[in-house]
Amino acid sequence: MKVVILCGGKGTRIRGIDDSLPKPMIPVGGYPIVWHIMHSYAHYGFKDFILCLGYKGHVIKDYFLNYRVRVSDLVIDFANGRELTFEQADQQIDWRVTLAETGENTMTGSRVKKVERHIGEDETFMLTYGDGVCDINLDELLAFHKSHGKLLTVSGVRPPGRFGELDHDEEGRIVEFNEKPQATGGRISGGFMVCQRELFDYLAPGRDDQTLENDPMRSIARDGQMMMYSHNGFWQCMDTYRDFEFLNSLVANNTASWIKR
Image (spheres, helix red, strand yellow):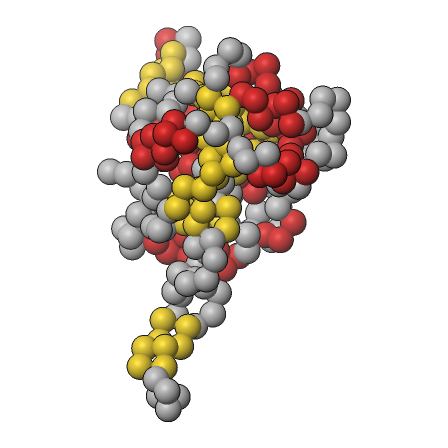
């Protein structure tokens, strides 16, 4: 099953970490965040990826074109015609990666429409964003999608709290303080979607300005074709420098629950 990852946004809210990189290439624990997302899918056997490129897409192309060089020890024998040997490769992968140019200023819905041909005849595919990690069980997500027979399943997550949460009694005495709690309110779309190919019928061809989250998904919902899979575990997008530091601290402390050992 193919996995479509939206990797074309400019990520203007997180500028300043390394302006030479597109957002999906910002490193978490030494690897781009999009690599972590792909690694999560690969853990469950989903290894056929379609990356929708846009802003600084050449950086993503260069990374995967030179991936083996990046993760291996190299021996260059200059006395023997510069013969090159790869040794002790770290984090070897067996993925199939399609790097699709979908336009620098193209919106999310139009990006998805532009990779329709790469889906081929597949009836079902997965779709997510290139800037959020999650410890979701993808086998259970897919089983849920198949069980209801609708066009689209969206993973509903509880966003992490931005501020300290105060748990208090009737007199105002604080009984518990959580610095980074998971929000206890409503759910938001966390990406990690499963789609039927009929999704493309809701996306107009030949346009760059169609946002997936606006008219297309609203129309799908009105038609009764959208379901939510509730995920109560870890989810975190990387929108700000604070998010960048938080995710890297989890990897450094070996508490990154999305990383499957």
